[in-house]
Length: 388
Image (cartoon, rainbow, N blue to C red; front, side, top):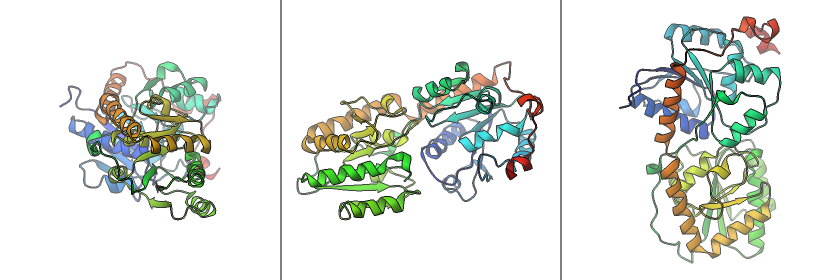
């Protein structure tokens, strides 16, 4: 039991899809509830998060947002916060964060917190100044890289707290120190949204290079997304139909990670890389792009390899080295597992978030302004924002 009990927290994640953020939130809710906090969750009623949490004691409230400018739900949200008198409202996604534009100061004791997951540049303008410096009391950045991006965009340093995401190592079977029989092909796997920013096409190009060099490998892609058809078409064009399979969406990737030998995350942009931590927890060697917060997770040459983003040749080179050096593959996998157990467990993450909640609730001042006095007197109605 935590020594810091009794907070009433509203979590907002309106996404219909599933990603690292939803996985982390699910575990966070379980820990906070076990430690005596009351948690309510606003989420898409048809989303994967809603389905995943149905058997828990967390109160879920249906919530839909169409885009960043959809403010139709703001009156309902204001009423909910006033009625329930939350201590914390935690906005877990970009679209959820945008709601703070019109929420105003709805309850004197509530604290607003947002989690920033991506390392995209933040422009120095009135919009981001208002969202980050005025409308929230605290910002959780998932990596030092994200923190630096926020500061470069004009966000006040004292507003930011770096809290790395974590995973549950016990969910992933620690494999024995045995090598796959030489007669079987090694399996390379990747997990993530099939979107352009994830760089999957470069893994396919690396696979084609290795096939041309005589390497016999299998490749498995777990996930769904807008790039799926294009990636399947590229697979056929590169002559990889027999080597590549698309496994679709997997809510629980533990079995998938047990069945592969090497994990690759070829992202072009990545705020943190939960999939990397899950692969490390499963004792798999990781090859990932040197982007975002990933270099803060992987020690290059020790627990995995870091390569330049968009470089299929570098990916192929790192893969070939792990294929011909099975002892290195095993060693890197075990080093990665040790790193996760020491520094990146979900319990550690939840403890730090809980501590941040309590720290903000004890602070005497709220650095937020009412909607009516913000932005040089400009007023935004929910209908006006929706119609633009």
